[in-house]
Length: 184
Image (cartoon, rainbow, N blue to C red):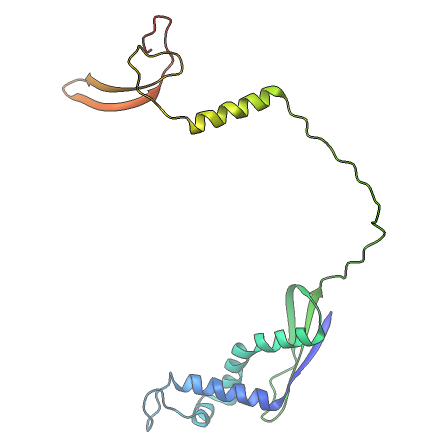
């Protein structure tokens, strides 16, 4: 959809003046304190096109939103802006926007319509596996005074003498045990 928009000349000039004031706060001009350069001097030094370009950068988003609101549409996607050219002093700014529009949904006859529902099918082994996984996740470890058994976690002090140096450390591991009940 293409939306045509026109910004009145007074509003364009107001934005140009505000942009010139903003630029004047950053400029140094002989005869004026830093940041106190009047808007007409800024326009004369930089040129009206440069100041108008800066004004468009700051105000075009708002003008675009106003044009879309005025058209009463809901947009989708990125707009494509077409501006014929920069307006002369005292002239309005005209531009057009080409944008995708969300289509209007039209409901058919849906009253009394029945839709089947599929029941989920779950195997008992999948349920048991999930319950076991949840148990493992929330389980706590308790210290016991017995030989390590199948599925036990073992924390041990490790001391291994290597060639010319001793290696010490502490480790924790889940063990599998031999039939004698000792950790393997």
